[in-house]
Length: 562
Image 1 (cartoon, rainbow, N blue to C red):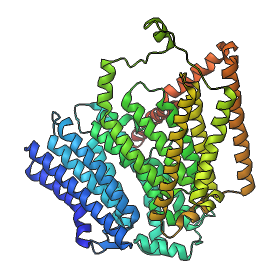
Image 2: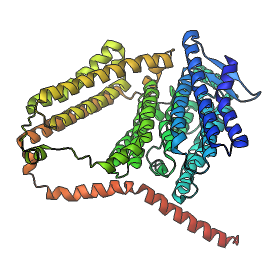
Image 3: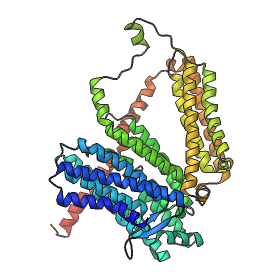
Image 4: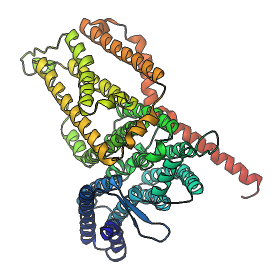
């Protein structure tokens, strides 16, 4: 098993070296070598995951003398299968998609190298290996995003990504320095064991060592996962090749969720960092989802969608649901990868067909057959919208594990699931249909199946990922004062119920149609302008860049360096 562990990531390194040195002019052969190497890597990852399921114990494989070790635990093995699977899809797609691009062979070599580095990163058992792989991911990504040297925008935004990554690396390096200085080891299992023994070692600023390291790790995760104020690079990397966008949005940008999970023993004693992660993730999810809706470019819309999903992932970590964040990471990776790889087909179909669905007016005038749409009574629809989601979510968690309902993190996730499900049902109510009860019944049936699937998978997946019950400690670390928490839940529940009831009543009675919308137009246009300019965050960065250049120019003149 140790030999397979070493072969798995190094196979792709060998493939990249062979392509760089011997196959630079042989396009077809280089693509086949790259795809076969990735396929074998994916197969070996599955074999090792299956071996762990049967054997049931983790191990550390040492490659170098002082550093360079691989940790075969559930997290790293699951990430190996996920990363190699996504990379295999991207490799196969790139064979034909990139065939007319220059530097075809170099592209496949860089893809192999990127995949290998990510495999080392997610399985690193020591801090040095983790830091080296974390740094090299940004370097190789820079060359992949700037693959087309004839597009100045691609190089500019690749450099922007590189700068953001390097800024986010600083807190991670500082966290590693603190851990090595405190525990006199670079081995992650050793460090985590010592933290469990003595978690209250004092650092400074009134923080313990785990709390300080937790804040630093959270900042590093924010930069890599495009959280708000560090998100500007993500939507603008679309000038790179589509396969790179798929790999980045399906795997690389998820590194923040992996970092939280890898250092889960640290975050058990870093409740303040989890609270900060929840707030940052919530803001990022809202802003990313809002800006996604106003984009007129398919790939940029997908970029902001990824930003919103990364916000949800960090928010899940903020409430202590670390296993759910990994499950979200995997599900979103496959979904967003397929979305990017099919973006060209969507654009082609949009050019061929306008995609405007026929409505009731079209049916009545063009087809000369009047439609008779109907809706559910507003009281029945309101009751379904408000009561059914919370009942389904609560009962599903109760039957899986009743004690989970006493965890604040689970309550928060139930609350968001309730809001999302109710919003979907309300949107269904607004749709006209000849049989509204059948339509609403179909939506409810789908919702129940999704919730049951999510509950079972998240519970048993969490038990597999953390077999020693670390999840409960994370939920406890993420909790706040019980009275404040209960008051917030009650207040928000009444707020949402009142808002939905008012909306249903206004929609059914026609009150909204009688309201003077002129006074709302200014607020709507202001909000649209604010979102269309991306909250002026990028303008602020551009202004700061110009000020920095002016200051550096004047400093050069003052010191007579130029």
